[in-house]
Image (tube, rainbow, N blue to C red; front, top):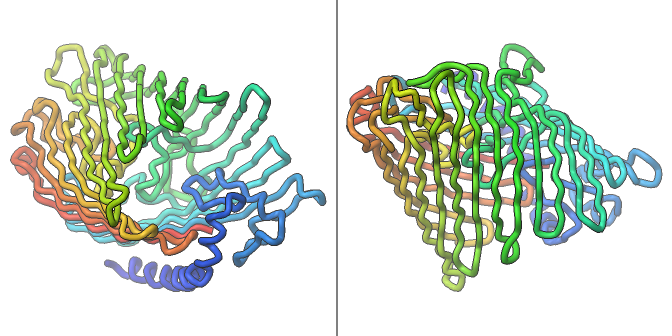
Amino acid sequence: MGRGSRLAGGVICVVLLPLAAQARAQDTTADSAARSPSRPAIKTNRWQEDWSALASTSERTQALDRLKYLPLVPNGAAFLSLGATLRERLEINDAAAFGAGDQHDTWLSQRLQVHADARLGSHWEAFVQVEDVRSFGKRQIGPADQNRLDLRLAFVAYEARTRQGTFKARAGRQDFAFDLQRFVSSRDGPGVRQSFDAVWADWESGPWRVLGLSSHPVQYRDGKAFDDVSNGDIRFDVVRVERHVQGENELSAYYAHYGRRLGRYGDAIGPEDRDVLDARYAATIGPADWDLETMVQRGTVGSAKIRAWALGARGGYTFQTVRWQPRLGLQFDAASGDPRRSDGRLETFNPLFPNGFYFSKAGYTGYANLIHLKPSVGFKPTPRLSMQGAVAAQWRQTSHDAIYTTPNLALPGSAGVGGRWTGAYGQANLDYRFSANLTGAVEAVHFSVGDAVRAVGGHDSDYLGVELKLGW
């Protein structure tokens, strides 16, 4: 790594080590607090944390708790909560994009977020979060790798509870994610998360929930501080219905419209209007669990008609009475590609706003023109530690379309070259919770590419990522 990366690493050690030591020292208190229903756990979406329990001084058991609850009025009906999240990830990648044209790379990815959450009575919330994301030592920095000091979230939310149900609404810069985040995600994996300038409203009553939103994704820029803008070239609108069945198991379906001023595909170019229908069923019954989702896309790109589809399935069985609670899992994914050129039809699936780490943290695989099968085995040796190993096989749905990498990038020259076999990979990851505030993760991936990838300059690739995340 370069000088900047080493310097950053030194600074991070100075910051993280004392905080980690403090977290370990507070571990007993934190674990006790986590068991209490009154004190919230640290969440990925920090705006979902309600710190009103700290109105009672007896609940203020950790350092700086006084900053988690700052009364704005004498009776405490309104308060301000401050917080921060720091994520450090060291990544070593033999080459992205299946190794085609890229060199070995090692870098430090740093994400720092600071937020203020104002709860104004029982109905209103105002939330602001700024973010600084940097990649130290990375050879090729993309839009999801770096965004120095910018506004990530800034919205006003309203909630009203009645006997009939609960109404919620948000307006402003926000993020949202659906289900396993196959197609609509907050993109927590890469350095820069995905935000939207949006209006959101939902109604919850008994087992039912109906929501709607209208949004533009944020266009990230890294030229100067606070230069991100709403992307007027893309619009994403959704109407979604959910219903709980057999307890907390969930059925859901939504219609979405994805509009882009200019879509560019191997067989079509022009204004993109894509209508989306999605359905999902997720359940856990006893030791078995599964998550099934399918999406159909229709519309046009220029003069070409869209005819695309995708499906994803994850399931598993946990031996709950066996030591380490082993879980056997199986994952299957498929997405359409375009089998014929110049026929007036575009069949390449658009994964919309995918989670870049859905398949693995290496980011080798995109959700288009794909058939993917992955058996896995997981263990939980302690409540704090979970481990998983997996092997996967990968094909193209059609060899006439390209091989795609994350998020939806065609491997140059791969359309129509070689057969359907893309390759196979092995994956191992470990997650550990040091305390209620500090977590760690390690993941290793080896991808053995097929002849179709080798024909366009690709090669076998290896990835290693080591992460620490501290939340306050």
